[in-house]
Amino acid sequence: MVNTDPTYKKRSAISFVYIVPLTVIAILSICIHFMLEEVIEAQSDTGKIVNVSGQQRMLSQRVSMFTLEYLMYGSQDSKLLAINALNSLKNNHKYLLSEHYGAQVLGNESPLSDELLAMYFKEPINVDKKLRMFSDRVEEVLKIKTQTLNLDTAQESFFSLAKEPLLKAFNAVVIQYEKESVDRIKKLHTIQGIVIIVILLSIVVELLLVYKARNKNK
Image (cartoon, rainbow, N blue to C red; front, side, top):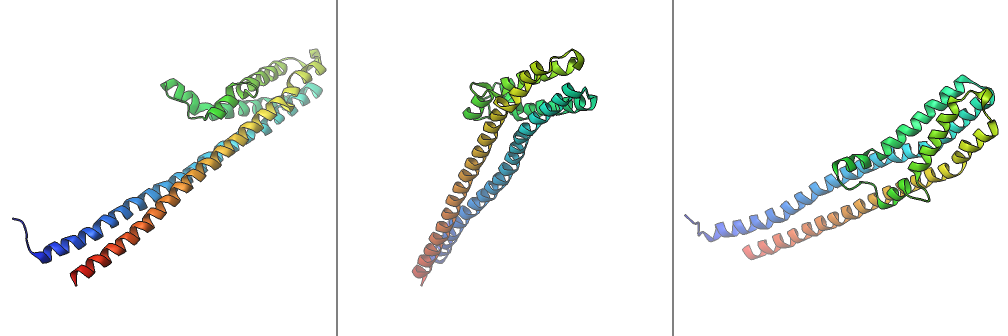
């Protein structure tokens, strides 16, 4: 049975005026919550990636330094330190590209940007190729007894790689990671600002509708 009471209809209209804007505000507030969560997560994840990619610069120099010490003095401690640093360098590289290779296995598009893909796998930067060349040469040198090694040739073969091409490549990657992090967070902040404006406008509209509805009921 339909209620035809005018008072009931007025109450229903006022309730509708309240419920719709409040529902919109509630939904938008939830959206802001998830956006804030995404910003926090993005900063956390990007901070770790930037930190790991930044470590690559230090590790490449550390590998070179201890390898050179081994060549000069035959120190087994230096050799061990060079091997450990090289392993860390390669493990970091695998970590930074883990999502890329994971996506390839699943046949999905790489999560890396076009710029990062070019830096990792294309010339002139080609971090992946430079790192493999550096790693192979260091491992080759560390397997040879220092007494039978031409120091000048060995130093030229790997130390020159670490000083310029590899270090510059790592620097370029770190800068790109930082740039993409800033751009992503700026985008999320922009969306968040738009949602806040919509919430404020919804509140204003609700107040106007309530005010109008009350005036009609007088």
